[in-house]
Picture 1 (cartoon, rainbow, N blue to C red):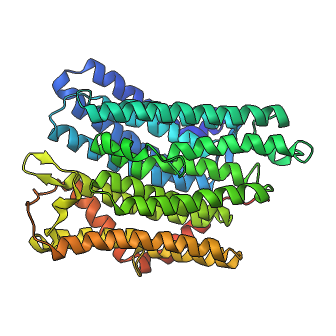
Picture 2: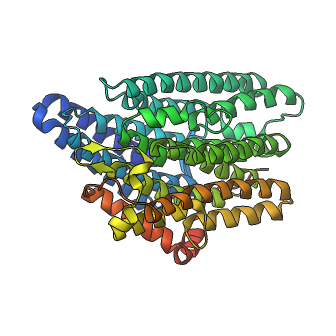
Picture 3: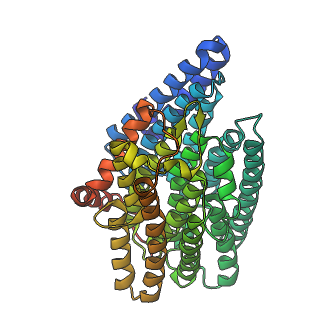
Length: 474
């Protein structure tokens, strides 16, 4: 019995989350419709908490079985993922009450998607990684089109279906090429294999794999529909996309380029560099002209994707973990802001409703401003430390032009969010926002305090992520 437990220990958090999700599904089907939603949400939240506790209780590191590993990198990523997913479920519960939806499927779909995300983070095999990615994305397809009577939601769901299927096709084609060339799907064996004799074919396969992953997170130039998906999806689903979905995909990309193909830096560094520059530039310019806060969030995520890819280029997975953690906190605050923009009985998505709110509600305006300052990268707020460390690493690696380009993109983001702050304090309020729900208030306060005190929290967080870094195999 003990040997059996040790065998499944690496996948214990996934197993716990899956069992709770299945139980929630059965409960939702069998319970009266009026009670089903509330009961199911409690079960999914309990599952997220239990999965998080199981991660905290696992003392052994670098354990796993064929195609699956639980190392420090996976432990840290999954903890951040589960915390953000818990917030997403709470956001969704409040939104369902606000919109008077009685359906219970929202939390169940989030639960299944979270299991897929956790599998993706720990995958050490292309087949396991693909299964995790698909298990993550299929529930998201239904969540994107959750408002069945809404045209925007249906359009967003359709576009997301095309994105997911196309990205999966690119990914699978690349994997099939790599398997034909190297004879294995296991990352450890691929790292030891001789790639010189068939290098062009290997690079061809790796190109399609990375293109598929770029499309899944909406990195430029694969970003065309990502803003439409963010805008058309229900607001809590947009929050889920922003906070959670990009994390496992970037973690999967990090495992691919730093482990089995770590020695091919001559190829993937320029490719990731080009995508990073395009993401920062296109995301920054796109954010300037937005009037919808959900589309603004989408373009902000595109920029953050560029900075995350830049961390991979300098082969610093600790920097990647640091930036992803800060991003999750700030994006959680932005998601809470989106869901708190309520005027009477309507949930507004227009940026213009922020006009004058800093003068009308000083405390709320100050909290919003701290989150926006974190996104802007202005010192000494949260985003500054990520970008400062990133610029330092790129300069130390003699990537001066690349660093200057990233700085330019960062200045675009600074302009966008400082303009938002100016709008809150230098214009007259046309509408008065309703009181934000308690869950949104908690997340907004937490994100704002983290942004403001990041100069104190940066060193402890840096120490933590240094212990959760991937070993570079180049």
